[in-house]
Picture 1: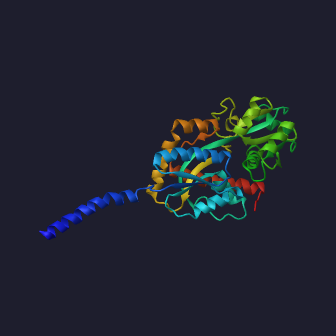
Picture 2: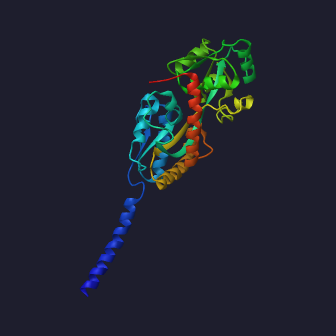
Picture 3: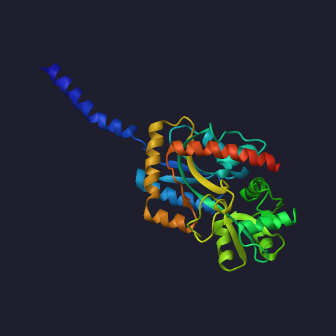
Amino acid sequence: MKKRQFLLACSLACVAVTPALAQGDAFPSKPVTFVVPFPPGGPTDAMARTLAAALTEEIGQSVIVENRAGAGGNIGADSVARAKPDGYTIMFGTSGPLAINKSLYSKVTYDPVTSFAPIIRVGYLPNILVVNASVKASNLKELIALDKAKPNSLNYASSGNGASSHLAGVLFNKMAGTTLQHVPYKGTGPALNDLIAGQVQMSFTDILTAMPYIKAGRLKAIGVATEKRSQAMPEVPSIAEQGLPGYDVSVFFGVVAPAGTPADRIAKLNSAFIKALQKDKVRATFAAQGLESASDHTPEGLTRFIKAETAKWKTVVDESGAKLD
């Protein structure tokens, strides 16, 4: 009798412990660190914090934004690449650390293709080609004609060597056969100030920054630098539809984890991010920031996209001759 009572007690103990073990093994069971490889206060940081708040609601655990800035995003990206691949450290990456920097910087300690497990491509922020109000061109055809009539006479401002606003002009010259001359500045603000003042003729800048100046008539929009028009300014045709199919220069945003993160945890995070992106508050906030939603939110889609972007920008960076330490 005592033996039967002992076995029954053991069975009841196992039943009681099993749910606790299952709960302990559930993912996530503790806060998730969401690394932003740029300083606080910028547009990438703002987007990440919007996503973190929404993701917290979905997974039932705190999502803590941690800024690890430096070297164009490389410091934060490297820290995530070396983090434990358990799903508790993820990164909100952009075109720089996830595609361009590998070719642009002389020393990069991670690989955008092999060092990460992609989770989701969130969206992209289009660049837009704008010109000073005095430039005698209102569309792409007229702008190219100006360059052809007087080669090397048109200058475009960028926020610095190797920035997307620089590489956009390199790609444009290659595809359009133009001779636009690059003038680097220390930041978008100084570049736009000189553009508005007429010191330079054009710039490939982000649409959100340029929009107020376009609406005020201080700059003219020639075309959105993506395959399709922007929801923020649907009246402006894309450069692609005006005669340069395939021209696409935008800053993309994607979430990645360290390579080797279990597939089931990647799938759970992907599902939670998709639900977060569907929240009305998130959609409204991102729309106000000019962010366009990605057409493919699968991990496989982001994997393919990172591979394609890395190869694309290597060619452009090599042609530009830009190199940063």
